[in-house]
Image 1 (cartoon, rainbow, N blue to C red):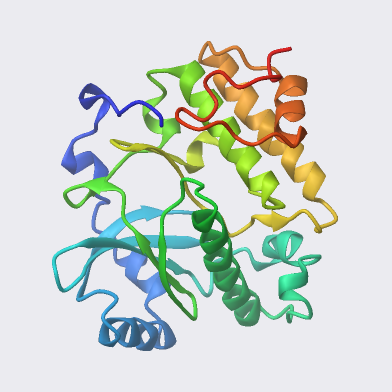
Image 2 (image 1 turned 180 degrees about the vertical axis):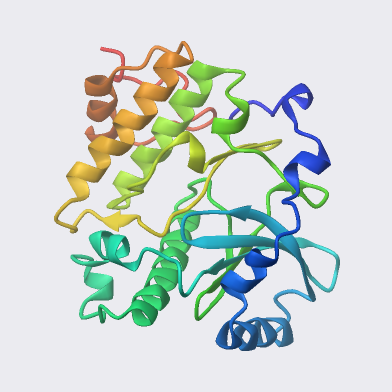
Length: 266
């Protein structure tokens, strides 16, 4: 488990909350999405949709509250502005989503289901991702990582207090994915959350099975991104050794999982 995020590095509540912006609502709350939100609420997934906490390339993420006061994250993919052409790089070749239409709306719904399926597979394997709770149309409800109702920051925003430990831990996460025959395909400090309970991996929609024709290319890119970032942070990180470790077939070690793994520094 990675070290806790330093209190010193935690941005203020005002910094973490997105400023009110009518466009955030215009981008996601079309008629069909509102119906889907209503259905998720009626099914007990959350009681109130509170406010936006993040805006990504294709989706907005909101903090929501359940009936017992628990906070959950609600990720809503934008129907009109998402880059559905880029999505097909990761959908095409995935046997789970064969024969998906190339129309924008159908692609986006498949993309949402794909992220939910990936989260379920990763979470079941013990990989540090948000626990998926529900999926409907272009919406995913998942575990919320934050203090109170303020989301934790990403690795890119706050950096690492223990670069070698965090590098080893994240490389072990990539190895776990490989062992269940999957690749994240967008591994970067922008998609790693620094929480009080260790590092968590976000944005899993693009993750592919090893059966995907570009899986090896995506794996090499993930490892290279990790090595490049942590080498700058001062960690002992080597691309060839890291790839060897991911593919060596040995189980991920327990406890710290990767702090003293064998073979990766040979």
